[in-house]
Image (tube, rainbow, N blue to C red; front, top):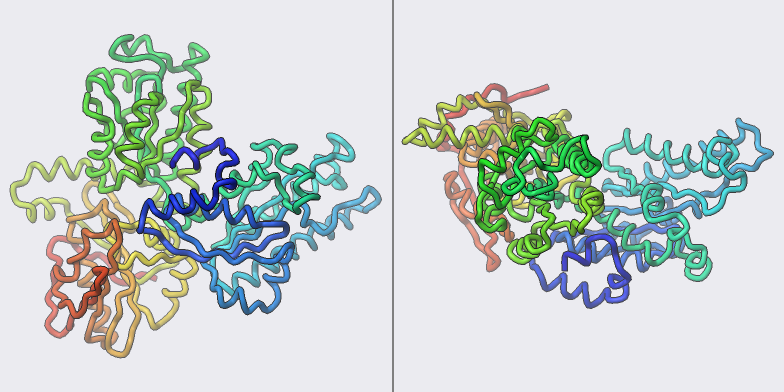
Length: 597
């Protein structure tokens, strides 16, 4: 099934929509349900079908609202009971250069062109502002593809009257809005159409015959791009790379050829290809992607290759290195377990088609790019999948690699202690536990959408919703930041509850798996109880909603001293804790701050 959703796409997705949809729904019962409103400036029926399939592939089951043909502006700006009752979780505005109302004429004066540009941009900005105020959900907006013809030829790009110049300026205004407004995201139609080929993208036949702003073969590429934004918003991105070595990171087999004869570096054209590929992979560390090696090799041979002076990726760039003769699927599972991740969080990169197929079969949730036989195109094979789409980038993302390396050091230290409590005290842990702060709104929202295992309710929140909760006196909110002698883990835990009389309903409780078994949950509970007592709250009510991934916290509240008061057939439970006799549970973490401006 995975190959259907890996570029290049065939016409099968649209031609066999119903059959593929049934197969995707039969693959899992653990879907995230969302409502997406598609407001179109052209025909959107096939766009929605393709988007539906891509999101199901990412584990997101959607209900769609579709505007009438070219009614995106009216649906957005005027009272719309149907859309209001639909209560969208995401709004996608599917417009194209066909929806630009005016373009410059050669006779227009520069000031007239500038005024025209501001008016066109202002029309869209007013729509975005109205939708944000009305619905408060993420908005995805296409920017514009270039026109299919150029009146002045190359001068179109530089002359203010040229449509190419005009669309470039309009796209820059859209980008500026995205940079300064939360919950607003661009779908880069300009890049997609160039990548696909503009003549094939904007085929006039499909416009005049069906009022599609793009050709049918281009629709899966558009849908994949929009789906990548949506799945990133809801924490469905991949988190780690598992990389083969021989003929993947370098040319040749290190055990046979020797490290001195590998193809890498600037001396040969093929060596440059592998070095460029390594540069691309290493750049992912900036996004918080974790780099690991899974190689069938003797450990000393693998390290000899990685320690070549002209290697771009060095052992310091890798969190875990598995070089042995075990099945790569097993090694990948071991890495996932050691990092407290799931195998489905990984992208497995290997030049060998047999190894790729084994991992696809043994670990079906793991992304496995079809690398092909030409290393010149390895970058494209990974990049076109969009596994690491960025919608929000926090300071913690850039530091994630080092955080996982520090965790490995903690694990080595743990093995030196016979008493686990003694080990925890040796870490010299310090926690900052405070109400939600604007500095961390982005990271908190990110955690709610990425954390699946240690997550009691698995409720997902946008950054705007986190801010609203922080500013509402009906809610008690806490984030937890944990550091120790090895380094700072960043914000790793979040709890929030809604006040109901003298009781607090805990609607959100989660923790990053990289700090499991460090007693951070006890520190968070102590501070939550302290805060509740200050507000006169006498009872905590906790909820556990089971998913395929959060069984590890099924008895979390029991361990915190709660009493189970109900249980549903699906395994959902409700718990209660009276605060009168609550006793402090954290004895190994120093709380440095409980209030923060």
